[in-house]
Length: 364
Image 1 (cartoon, rainbow, N blue to C red):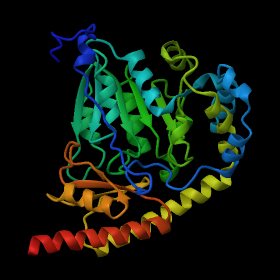
Image 2 (image 1 turned 135 degrees about the horizontal axis):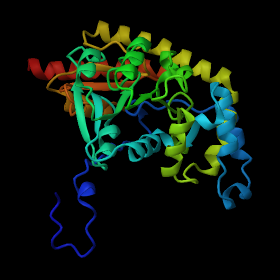
Image 3 (image 1 turned 90 degrees about the horizontal axis):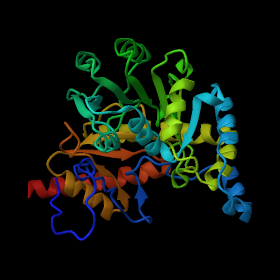
Image 4 (image 1 turned 30 degrees about the vertical axis):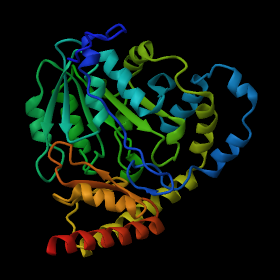
């Protein structure tokens, strides 16, 4: 616990003092940002048109998200009462944990995975039970099943997972839901568009299933902070009780319908990223760099003891990448977001030059 004995301000509750801190790395916007798994190009042109037509009325009135939620529900093929929009998927995770995790409960977490699961869980009185993946970083299905207990209250699975891009199959997800009927099973489909497989159709049929989606990745709306949870209406009811009624802002709500309607732009961007991923993986193989097979818009690579120097030299070359060495079982590994083919050609050139410089230093 932090020692604030000499502080002049009131101390927060002990649980907050014990929370893990998260500080996202900052970098030059002039560099090629391959460190946050964002859309690396742009949102739909239709979204930009909407932004140009925003009136002062949008800014003076409190936002009303339910009409847009109904539109999103129709787009996803679920009922309006089964969907809630959130301020990014981070808020979705936060409110879900606040609604369901209590003292004595356990969050079951395959690791390595998205950092914020553990951060938000640490604000509750629940215990985090980490299930470590093997060196291949594939989904640890059998280990996860063995870790389920009567105290398991939430199981959080990013699918595809970060930083490796591995996946849990539909059959595995169904078996987990069956083995833990009294636990919320969160399937975070942030990278769904690059994977193409979903369990969203099971919402309402599998009562303990909750699916999260974000509009920060393929849709290119990270700056507007939009996410959602889809679940049985009874589960959504409790989530709404914790959620602020005005957490999704008016600009985001105004832009979301345009983003959903422009399916052709979304399809183009996803196809471009998948083609770029294939080309970049070939470049990694040619460079002799170990990589993990990915079903998302990023790839994890093995750099080894020089991971910090590699990341710094890539930055100096105008390409930002993410050192994941602090993740469980990822020492020496770096994650690289996949952008367009042209962007990844630039990244491949910087990577080859960086590796050559590092290897020359070793040989010298």
